[in-house]
Length: 422
Image (tube, rainbow, N blue to C red; front, top):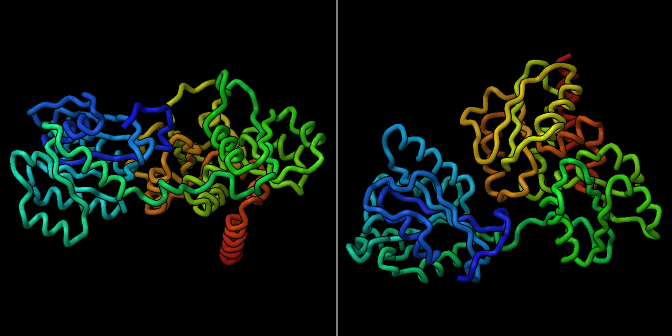
């Protein structure tokens, strides 16, 4: 294990540490990181909120350990801790289920069932093995069900390498080979123009995560990445002897970029690229069509994955609400949530508009999409919402034939349904 590097959380394998109170979860985290990251105490419930520790673990690369409060916590404060712990499940790629001296009963069975329902790989960590080895019948059961397990005595600094080896064997394939952001839309040697407006929302001295990811992926793929402001796009296009294979813009500059980009050149936005990489593009397409179903007075949920201080004309709090209300022709009621906060009850909302989630893992985005589908709430992301309300949706989907076909099929179904009702 080496010193942590500044890799974004979205690149890190999220490893959640779960178990009952006082099972030794915090001691396990401290052992794995070789640091006193979490407070260790004999008093049950010492860990109150999830504790995160980013680090590098070879050969896994950048990872994020998340030490959780005991899920068997009790009382009002305990209920709040349990709720926070359950939020961690939404973003867990691999779960460490920590046992207290081999103890396994209905509580551990329930946790295991939760991991299985969510498709989360789990490693059973039989901690405090210096006090009591895991029962033979438990080991037989774990082996028969092919559940990975290891023995540790975290307080005695024993078992670190066994846990690491088990993690290496359990890494999800999608973490090793994540979906591409842009590389499959171009060929080596192609030019892609990235339109990056420099306005009051642009961070001083740097560019935002989606733009960085696109540039790096294009370079890795042997493409030419040409970054311009929206005010210089037409000039850049005029100077190119060969038209670019793709133009990608910040969604807020859609109108100007669409006007300056010839129809023959595919065009989309960074946010739509993220919608495909992080989530389900077809579900987002269906969500965009549901914008036409909004009526004045409806409630819309806006979800921002990053916490930030809103500025004047903020995209999620002012621009998108304004464009949606112009499209609907009346007042809508907006609720905004940030970070990992998300309503338990989605039924009051007619639409969820989600940010691109560039700093999140695909698993957490897919979990939210699953919850929306289960609740019957359409979901769309920022870029697709903007493109739809500005009348640029079909053009923005052109680089994605599958999504374009899904849009046309869904549009035909909706038109047929309207015709039947009338």
